[in-house]
Image (cartoon, rainbow, N blue to C red; front, top):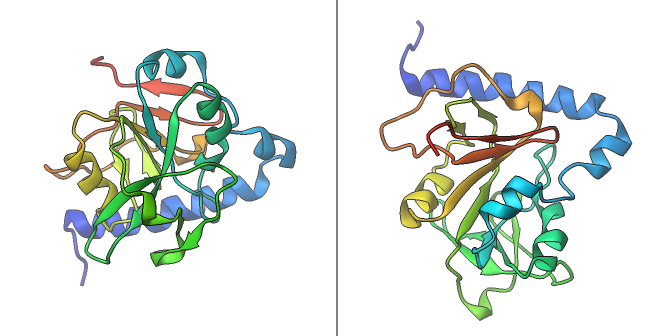
Length: 195
């Protein structure tokens, strides 16, 4: 018996996209991997010039490593934040972070800064993803954490970070899915056409 629902499509698409990402990262030149995502491209720097807080994430396994953007962002005077998963219901907050700060283990293998300083409000949210398309749709892990963060901070610039191999023709989007404003890969910065 087959399940032709959009949710089933997303589940199978996630499995395919994860394997594709894993294969790409496994065959990536080690030097290219080490250099990827260590600089903020000029068009992005211009776009976030007035932003105060940029939320990144600590890349897990073969995810694009957003944490590498922290030093250049801090050199631009930005406060860098990392997410802290609060519960298994999709709740997440962002905490200020310096690259030399200790991180604490969180849910789902994540790590986050000490929450004592309180949450910050991001002007830019850099989100991990499993797949993306040129319409700026993002396929995430399926827990809805970033969907809820995007809805909670509707004025924040939404940027997906991905390896180029994660692009697909079309990501199935639900009515509540907010599209990204741009996607940054190791080879290009892709902006939404309507901006």
